[in-house]
Length: 277
Ligand code: SIN
Image (cartoon, rainbow, N blue to C red; front, top):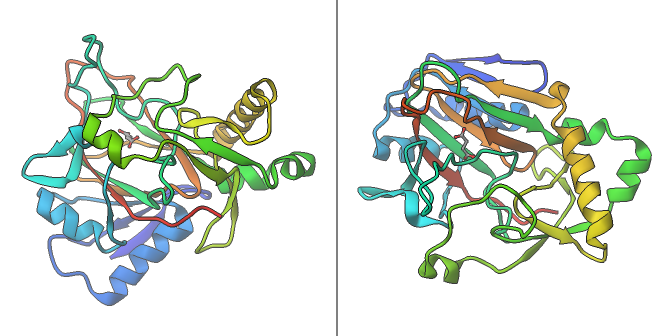
C-alpha cells in the first residue's frame, strides 16, 4: 500500500490495498494516521458490497447510528445511501449534503468521520468539497480568534434561518434526536491538538448569550472566511473511491452541478465521535 498526498493542506489517497482482504496491523495504523494527518483519505479502486463496506469502515472505529433512518439500506441498515433520485414530499429533487455542513453536529457526540463509497457516478461533476477548518482557524486574525474563544453555539436538527432544507424526521426518529445541544465554536482536535472553527450553517440556531443580529453575521463571516479557495479541497470522485473525512476539523458539501438524468449513488456510513471540547 502507498499513501500519497492530494494537496499540501488536505487530502491523501491510498493505493495498492484491497479492503475485501484482511488488512495488516501496520496498514490499519497507516490508514488511520493518514486519515488524522490529512483529514480526507481516499482509498482508491474498491468494489465493496454493503457488508464489506462495514468491515472496511470499522478499521477506523465503531459505527455511529444516523438520526434519519429514511435512507438506510433495507438489507444492511447501518449503511445509508446518498442518491440524487429522491424527492421532497412536494416533488422537488433532494440533493443530500448540498450546502456547507458538518455531519450531525446536533448530537452530543457528533460523528468523528463520515465515509462514502462511490457506486454510481455522473459522467461529469458531483464533486464533494472540503473546507479545512483548522487551517481556517489558524489564518484568522488574532482579534477574531479572541472574539470567538469561549463562544458556545446551539445546534438543532434543522435551524429556523437556513434556506437549505433537510428531509424531515419520522416520529420515531424524532424521539432519538436531542432537541438542542451546545458545542464550542472553537474545538480542539482530540488527536492532533489543533484548534478548528466548529460551525454548521444548517444546524446552528444561535450563539449562547448573543443576539441573532450579532450572531448570524458573525457565523456568516466565519463561513465566508473558512470556505475561501485556499482552505478547500475539491474531491473529484472516481469509480471505486472509498473516502473517509474528519468531521472534527472539516466542513463539506456536495455539488448538485451535474446532469440529473444521470444517477449519483454512494454508500454512506458515519463513525462514533466524542464530545467537542
Ligand atoms: C454528505 O454530505 O454526507 C454527502 C456528500 C456528497 O454526497 O458528496
